[in-house]
Image (cartoon, rainbow, N blue to C red; front, side, top):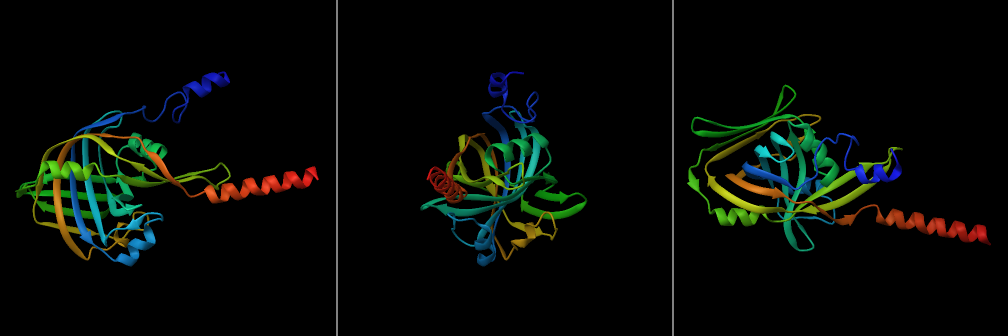
Length: 264
């Protein structure tokens, strides 16, 4: 295969059979169960990377069911999203996410920098209760419950909230084990249609695990919960901060000094 063919063909790994197709990525009947809870503000400040700022000491714990997603198929995910601000703009930082499908794990990490790991989340209705669970292997990590469709929410308001910016920390190592990419990425959900939105009484339990540390942001008080069904498109991202740029500048300066010394 010629160099030009490699450059023209390469999109994702493996070269001849990528783990996921090019976007856009459209989701139909995407179902959210989001429980917002108060946690320790000092623990949040240790986790959220600058230049993001913690908006308030709360976390959104999410269970998301995706039965129809372009290129990714049918899967479920669960994890923690933290309200933040960036240069005065309100948004959300995805702290950790666990799901049960390889293409969105590979695509999410490689394209945007989603912090995704393989696990077994579930979201279902059990009689009168919306139930979300997350197992890492055989170990229960999270259990969320909410009264099913107790009160309707304003769909237009919820659509505006979904359209707010989202932030990710994208990290890709070099072949020698050092960091090659370390960037703050911003993306938006687009073409959003909220088909239904509800709230109700809710509870959330998180459990300790060495490799799925959701309980390290403890639940001090459940503040609210909502259940949404929406169609939307996952937009591609933009880099808003490069954590390696100072070191890259330093390496360029060292190289220039060395070149001048050799010339002299």
